[in-house]
Amino acid sequence: MNIDLISSGKPLSFRQRLSLTASLAWPAIIAQLSSILMQYIDAAMVGRLGADPSAAVGLVSTSLWLFWGVCSAATVGFSVQIAHRIGAADHESAKDIFRQGITGSFIFGLIIGLIGLAIAKPLPHWLGGTEEVCPDSSLYFAVFVAALPLLTLNYLGSGALRAAGNMVVAGGLNVMMCALDVVFNLFLIFPTRTVSVLDFEFTLPGAGLGVLGAALGTVAAETVTAASILWYALTKEKRLAFLGKKFRDSAAGVKRIAVEKGGLIKRWFPSGNVLHNALRVAAPMTLEHAVICGAQIMITVIVAPLGVFAIAANSFAVTAEALCYMPGYGIADAATTLTGQSYGAGRKDLARKFGWLTVSSGMIIMGVMGVALWLWSPDVMALLTPVKQIQEMGASSLRIEAWAEPMFAAAIVGYGVMVGVGDTVIPAIMNFSSIWLVRVPLAAILAGTMGLSGVWLAMCIELSFRGVIFLWRLASGAWLKHGLKTDKKENAAIAEEEIEEAEIEEAESAN
Image (tube, rainbow, N blue to C red; front, side, top):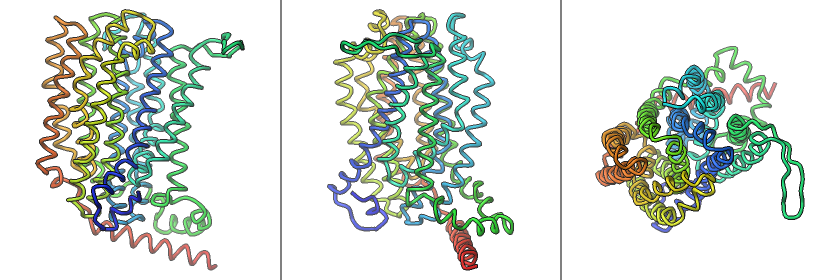
């Protein structure tokens, strides 16, 4: 199904909307599943090294999510604007925003990475880690945050492709990243060893870096993927590409523009309106993610006194549970594209219909995943760790949380729907208020009497509550009244600049 139907202004039947949703959602779901599969791979491989290495990774995992999420949220401000411009069939403006987003995102990722490196050494101690665990935790964290500038560009490139409706390439490259992660980890985590496959034995070389190898392997896979995504978006995707043969052929014209008026070089930096809109969308999301991850770090602090086994079980259970909610995030990505392009095309009624369709689909799929999680949680935990006590504690936690999956889907996809139109302030407040006012206090109370199970019961209650309030906002329609306003003067200025550049290029070509 062609996503250009949205910008065409033609009416879409329910069947067409469902087909379009499915065509965008399944590659996004695969991309999200491959992302969580990478966490499974790291957790399972490190888990074979014992309880202390597993705890070293688990101790800083929520802190890494904080840094990753902040960088990811910062790029959404650009990708939402790209979706709006594509929905309005203004591809030149979309390219211009993408170009500005590359510079803005890289600088932001660099700043956040430097902050992460500054706190890498003391962080595990702040979180209550033991002396046996802290050195590996610090090193693991430092490697990941050092790569944040490149990872932020990965987020931007993926978001821009999704905004253009191209989920297949972004999904396929993320699957490639998962495969590369396996390969790199095999050689970096374990020492050289003899491996038996069927009746054949062979020596597999390895660096034996343990926890450090897991971090390096994942970062290497992410770096290759980021380069691939940006290359495709910049040179192949018709709605975004501004590099290629035409760009190379007009090198003289580009040089003249740069010298005379700072044209192309100037436009690599966000203009006032683009930056204002990006901040309006991304700032609440960034703050929200920071506050939520702060709450998750607080949960880690609550879990830490329960012991090394509880820390490891909590980390593995969080990784295992992600298998259920990643389809929801995939559908949320599709929802952001669909509602964003519909809103950009001025079709608010269509945006509302896509909102309900995507949320309903997410609730059904994650409900089924919740049933599967309840049934097979012991088997999933056994894949992640050979330690029996960790398996039992993790499986018990997963069976509690499985009941919340449908309402968790309502919150995840509902948020994606609202982000698509640029409505992020109230949804962000809803997210972080829910986790801080419901989950954290309940977890602190229940952990004393129920241990790790109490922490996960608090999570189940909070996620159900959050789903209810997102359904309420979706039904109210208030999210459609708080979207981005397109600056027509800015669009006209961009269009005029594009025409002027084209005229200069043509003159240079004629000479």
